[in-house]
Length: 400
Image 1 (cartoon, rainbow, N blue to C red):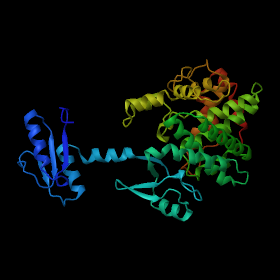
Image 2 (image 1 turned 180 degrees about the vertical axis):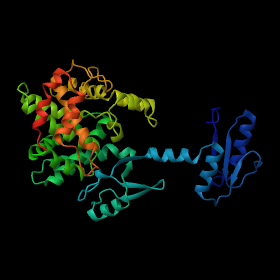
Image 3 (image 1 turned 30 degrees about the horizontal axis):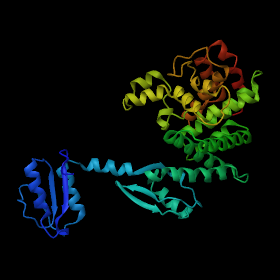
Image 4 (image 1 turned 90 degrees about the vertical axis):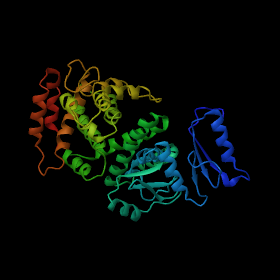
């Protein structure tokens, strides 16, 4: 170590030795003209002008603070380092009745406090207490996140395949499963395990769609559920698109499967609800609070979704990557405004279904949403192209 001239700091507990090791080191530093900080705990004969000396009874916390000052490490730097040690996850990933397989923490004033130990059974009363504190996230140790993800995946798959779930329970579990798939895809890619959960989730979404006869009823369920905007939008697109396809003579059962797949994965590259709610190139470009990198991600998310799904190890539905790339009506998967007439008819159905879903979700806080005719006229005015006009009439029979 002494031969390494890039050394910046040496920390030594002088009381642990029978001789003044700090003094010996200091002499070597002087002889070799090494520019390094020497920090000593205990007594030493080294001149105080050349080293930092602490009494052996000093608290470790005070030593570390002094070392940080010497090395130019700020409290912000330390907070970021601690932050890297913990990984944030949505509160919804903690479900009553589950026995967790990792320690779970919350962040209170930049201090990570353990709320559940590994193997604790999570009780609903404890969760209610946490939710009353308006906590949005839990934290686990970063090195444990794959272990936790696999655990949650198994638990969610079991619940999704439970035929006795109430409609409220199915909505909640499906929403959590959707978030877990998106989280895993973003962090580790779409593995076999991730795809298994995605398939269970898509099956559950289809069951929800089949069980709801009117759009307003589905919307009412979604609006009272603490699920993400992305999940709500995906389920509404699935519902509306399935309705349109059943009215199209050219649509097949296979295309319904493709549509379900694409409605599930179309926002896989977007990990924030705020990103999904930007749907205009000009609005995106003028956005004050997004970085250039974020703007590029949003603009190219359709293309990114197609590329991510093309790497899925499992067999994916035919035409899925094409529809994902074209799901905003652009042939190249970039941007929002340059709607092309050279896209797949299935992509056109997706564009119209998403437009309807966005309109009604934008009114979720309103007491009165626009009528079916008002929504229809708004969409028809925006997509007054011959190919789209052949699909539009199917929206007029949508039960709301």
